[in-house]
Length: 254
Image (cartoon, rainbow, N blue to C red; front, side, top):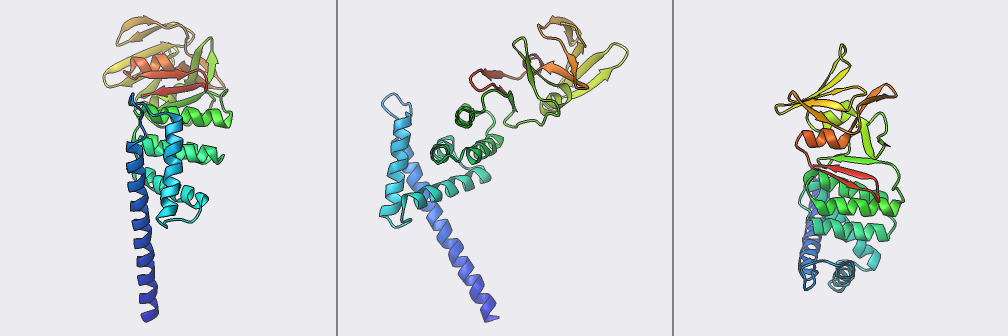
């Protein structure tokens, strides 16, 4: 009917205006980020803040928004949409996090960075932003583990044992795409991935990798009915890079 068609047309116009507005904001962000880098090619915090202030001014000058708050919300919405679609750049995510941290929206900032990481799990800048968010939250004591951009769910919290971060073997193995088994007779954990077989006897620092004896300085152990293993050794034996940030207690496996 005419009423229904009118509603549909009005909705289409609204969608068109939103897309035009989003496109304009994306172009403004892109243009300003090009001028962000200093003479050494490095992007400073002050340069980023200047980009954001200029961006807000541009959006108000061209009538896209009326106030600073409206400008921040419009930029955040645009970049969040890009994150969800997997099209947002690392620089754009940094703009978003800077805005949200300034506005004390740290939980939302963390969610956005973690979503961006799922699409770009090797992006060092995104992990740096995640560390920044954890510092802003004051969450620096608990151990956080990220494997290929995702945060595995552990039913026993990771803990530090003599400088080694211990994690549940099944959860970390599955996060790494490996299969895990258990030899009851020898009390040995068996992890297999891409032709690599790791055998970790409980309580022993002597392990085997494809039948070759190796020594690790923190053995597998039982905690709260779960077998716990050192995340660094397991990940590296399976061909992964492991980074550790002591300031936030964050482990990154990629």
